[in-house]
Image (cartoon, rainbow, N blue to C red; front, side, top):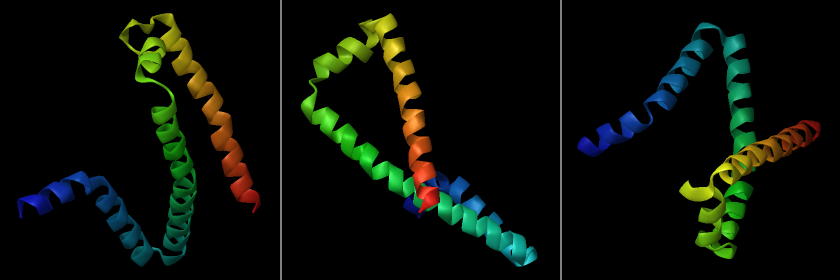
Length: 106
């Protein structure tokens, strides 16, 4: 029973959204179908982006020594760490937009 409580607590937000979708589907079927359709499309798009990201992170973890990562992104990185973080954000966003656009054209 304690394990079930942990699972429910962990996924409470998701379960509330799922319940809200079901209630909306019952109360307003036309709007509910559109909401469910958009939710499924977003889920599929997210699932198409996450595996390549995890693959690249795994390859970086294997190929790049931890000392190098700590040198550029660790506590003592200083301004280099901020630049690395900023450039990571700047260069990843267009890739995500590109994947979304290509996914929309198919």
